[in-house]
Each structure stands twice: as C-alpha cells, then as structure tokens.
Length: 308
Image (cartoon, rainbow, N blue to C red; front, side, top):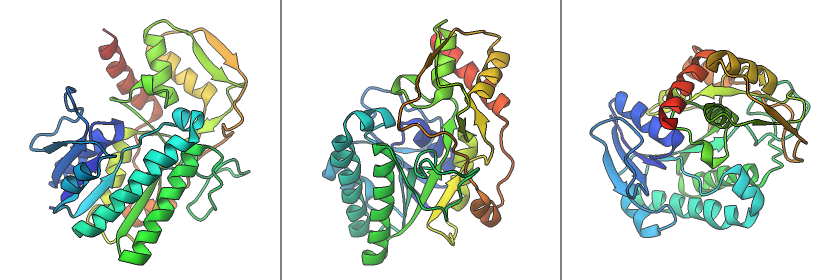
C-alpha cells in the first residue's frame, strides 16, 4: 500500500483515479477546491484537503508525507488556452513547476502527470503515434503539456525526482462535464438529451482515439508501485473512430436523430490522432478495453440522470 495524493481529485479523470487507487488498497489523499461541491468520487476512507493548486501553502501541506503525487489538475482547457495562451503559462506551467519543487522538498518518491496524447503529437502524416515520435503540438494547451513534461525531466536530472507522464488520448465517460467544452462525446450526448443541434467541424472524417475513463484509470493504476522502464506512456485504446462513426453509435444508443450544424474546421484541429500503446501493453499487459458502444451507453445513462 502506498500513500497517494491526487491533485485535481474532484475532476473527471481525478475522481475516477481516486476510486481506482482506493480499490487497489492505496491510502489516498484527495486535493481540490471542493468548496460546497460534493466529492465526485465514490470511494470511502479518502482523506480530503480543500485547497488551491496555485496557492503554495496549500500545495506544501498536501504533498507532505506522500510517496506518490498524481498531477491531474489543469487550470485551462484547450478552448481557454487557445483564447489566452499566456493564462496557461502563468497558471498551469508556473504552478506545475512550483508543485515539483514542493515534491522535491517533501521527499516525494514519484510524480505521475496527466499529459495529452490527443494533441501533443500535432498534425503529422501517420496512422498512429508511438512515444518515439517527436511531439509537434500546434495548440497552446498541448504546448503547455509538453513544457510540463520537459520540466519533469529537468527535476529528474537535477534532483532525482522520478516521474511518469501519461499521454492520454480522448477519455470519456460518467462525470465528464460538457460545460467545460472539452470532449466531443459528453458534448454530443448532453445536447442530444436536451434536443439541441450538434456541431460537426468539416465532413466528419476527423479520427480520434476514444478511451473509456475506467480503462484509462485502470491502465494508470497498473503503473503505481512498479519500476516503470519508461518515463512516458501513451494511454489509449489504439483504435481510431471518425466523428461520423461516433455519431452513428450515439444515434443507435440514444435512439435520437439530432440536427447537425456543419462548421469549418479550426486551424489548430488535427485530422487524425490514434495512439500506439504497444509500449504500455508490452510492459503491463492491459489489452481488454470497453467497447465504444458500451462506453457511450454507460455515459448516456449518466447524462440522462443529470438532465432530469
């Protein structure tokens, strides 16, 4: 059993990670703003710290006596970072550097970072991307994630801080909030539940690697406490699905035929992103993924429950 701090524990990925770590017998501390919100995770026996990621005193308190720190908070989304790239630098990158210094000071054994696999490789003519492909991010959000990965390498070289960066594809599932304007699946399902039209960019041929959230956190959970041979792992299904095919699945699951509004493709959107996960599966052996249809069906039940 390890002592684990999850920063961003009340978010989409973070809350599922809390549940996964507790199910594996780890001692988990959940750090987030929380405020008046009920905890999104369902696990019991979790130590909860309400704090601000950008407040150094709060972070110092949270990392004390922790073996593993999971950096799963982001102060921006792809949309907000695009609207104000300096915000990502001033908040996400700067606060991440401060976090890593606090981890060094506290004697943290390892930092696990939620990077992005869906955007970090950029627009390159490949059918899939392995970790050996040079990242060429074109969006401020992905540029920031790559910078944080770089700072983790720096802290490893200078201070011996061990780390793993997870380049996560396009996770989806229950607890994902459509109002954050991130994640086409929750956005589509939320609008379908309310009888609103869907926006499709281009002809629907854009391909993404969709990963059910429970698969994502189970893959991440496999790395905890192991002597990882690498510092970067792609976390994805390894299967590409076009927006058109995704819509077909959503129609079958919901029984709804939504109106579609077609808009031009933004310049920073990528045509195809599918992750090669052979590095992860060869080391940890995870290869049983929830099907897209089943995952969307589970997510749809959650969305319907929220819209009542």
